[in-house]
Each structure stands twice: as structure tokens, then as C-alpha cells.
Length: 192
Length: 101
Image 1 (cartoon, chains in turn cyan, green):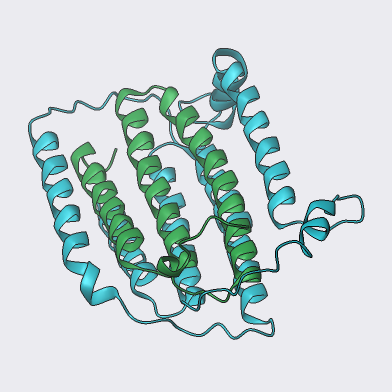
Image 2 (cartoon, each protein chain N blue to C red):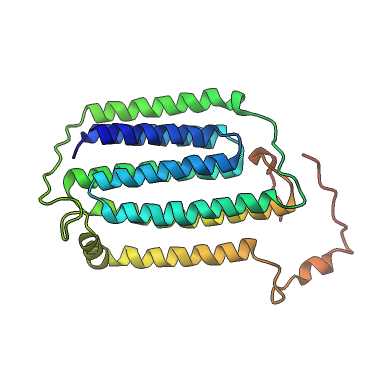
């Protein structure tokens, strides 16, 4: 119980820090703390494999991606200047909807009776609920089709990212833009 | 289970609405994407809690799928941020109001 309270306080504090931080890099640090606390929370819930995946994929891959993009955007010729602060104007409606939704969930929870099932064995034992063997058996037998679809989703994401942000490779055709230029000169971009 | 299910769900709800406030109130696209990661994680916490509550693996499988989708979403979202930033200097998503390439 003490571990749960400490972990949830860390998670909420780091989430608040992530959302209110001035610079995106600070948000990344807050998110890192949040993810690690969440991974430890998964361990207390008998989800060993997900705890490892949480650290490897989220803290290891996704946050590094964020850091790389922040570094890329900040290091160019264009400065990454802060825009106008619109936080005060939108904070009230955001908090309103947040509080309404939270109260709805709290009411729904208070009307439900949860009876947690007993689990034989401790976290870390083989073949207990939530162990890697248990998870792998469920993933590759009952849920094989969702697993395959996941592979497809990741492939689509990779191709999409390459198409979106990839270089203007020599193989990529761009004849339309060249042919169109003399006919209609590019319009002036309206300043924001 | 060292804490009741309700406590875990309440924490997940708090994290979710912190993320919602982040998505709505912040205008920096990077911080908005990070708030979306918070949303994914709070949903995962609820899924894992319910999986533990019923001693059923399906919640773990769902959380695993959510993690992969979150990875794909982060990659594509950051690619969009990079490509928009390449064309215009923006730090505010309100200023990106055109779909023209």
C-alpha cells in the first residue's frame, strides 16, 4: 500500500510537471519519471513483461525519438521561439471538461463492486499469471491474429514516416511542381 | 494486490485528465504529443489493473497492442511536426491552419 501511494504520487506529480513545463525537454524528463514509476506499478500488478516493455519501448525508444526531434527542431537556422501564451484562455474549459469526466468515472467506480481474483504464486515465478511465459502463450495462441495485425500497423507507420519526413530522394519524382511554376507563380504566404 | 482496484482506477483517471488538460491547454505540438502518451499510459494502467483484478491475460494483450500503436502514433506525429516545421516556423498548433503542401 505504501508503495502504491508513493508510486501514484510520483506519477501524478511527474504528469503535472510534463503538462506544465515551459520547454519540451523538461516535459520529456517528467515523462521519463512517469514511465518508470508506471513500470514499477505494473510490477506490483503482476505484469512483468509489460513492465519491461514499458521501459524498453516507452523510456527507451519513444522518449529518445522525442529528444531527437526536439534537438533537430532547436538546432536549425530557425530559432524555436516561444509563441504567445494561450494557457490562461483555454485552461478554464479544459479543467471543466476534465473535472466533469473525472467525477463521472468516480461515480461509476463507486457504484461497482470489485472482487480481485486470487493468484497462486509470486511475481517472478515461471508460469504464474503475468509471467513472460504466460504472456507469450496467450499472445501466440489465442491472439495470434492481433499480433500479426500489429506487425502490419508498424510497417504502415514506418512507410508513412519515410514518405512524410524522408529526404527528397533522387528516385522521387517531382516534375509537376517544376512544370507548374511558370504558369502560376507561387503566391505569397500570408504571415501568421 | 496491495491496493484496491478502485485506487488504481482513480490514479489512472487522474493521469488521463492531466493528459486531456495537456492536450487541450498546451499549444506546443511536442508537449501535446507527450500528453497523448500520458493518455495511452493511463489507459494501459486501467487495462493492467483490470487484468490483475480478474486474473485474465486479455488486458495484458490489449496493453501490449496499445503500446505498439502508441509507438506508431508517436513516430507519425513527430514526422508531421518535423515536416510542418520545415515549411514554416511554428510553435503554436493554432497557426497551422492549412492543409496545402
